[in-house]
Length: 133
Image 1 (tube, rainbow, N blue to C red):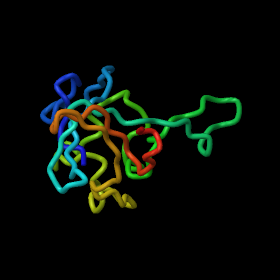
Image 2: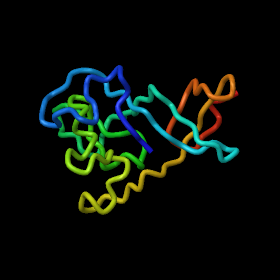
Image 3: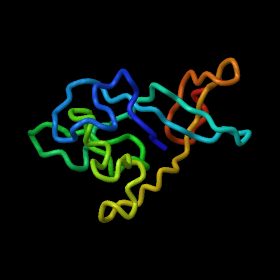
């Protein structure tokens, strides 16, 4: 689950969610490793895909989060502070019961590569392990 904003992101958990932010949204993600250990990725970025289903003919094709676990999240990184509920301080990957129709529980499948026992080199949402050799 997303736990906080990375220091590289200009938004922080205490920032004003109504203030536009042009920086990339970089998050700290906490997750459980294959051996049950608690792991953390400090510089994770959400992937976005083109949203052809909601595009307007002759218009601009919008974006959407690439993984279903982030369906309640904003469709772009234009305002990083919009990824967190400003009152509850809960991130959009865990808005079930907070936002009507949202089923995101903060638990989403991921794959990762690890170095030196604790350092996470890459974290990707989803279950396809084919990208890791």
